[in-house]
Amino acid sequence: MTTVTTTHGIRRVGPRIGAEVIGLDLTKPVDGATADQLRQAFREHKVLVFRNQHLTPDQHVEAVRVFAEPFDHPTAVKDATNPLVYPYNVRQTGKASVWHIGGLWRSPVFAIPDLAWVSPASAGEGNAS
Image (cartoon, rainbow, N blue to C red; front, side):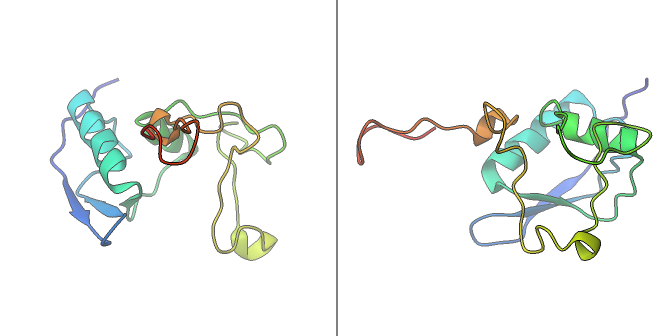
C-alpha cells in the first residue's frame, strides 16, 4: 500500500471546541506525519469535521485507525463488506437524533486514549488528564 503525503489545513470552527480539516482526502492512506497532526488537532479541538468524504467501509475503518483501533459492537447491524462498520440512519430509526456516544459498555469506555481521564480522590485535588 502506498502512503500519500498530503497538505491540509485545520480551521477552528467554535470558540471552545471543533475544527474543520480542509484539503485531506481520506480515501487515500494517511502518512505518519499527517496522522500525528490529526491526533494533535483532536486533542486540541476535541471534535474534527472532515467534509465531503465519500468513503467505502474499508476506507472508513482506515480513517478511524488514524486515531485508535476500531472496536466491534456486540449488537449493532454490521455492514456486509466490513464488520467494523455499522450503517446507521437516524431518520429511519429515530435513535440518537440529537447526539450519540457509542461504546459506553466497553472497559475502558473509549478506545482513544486522549478521552480517558483519572478522577482525583476528592474535589479540588490533583489534575485530570
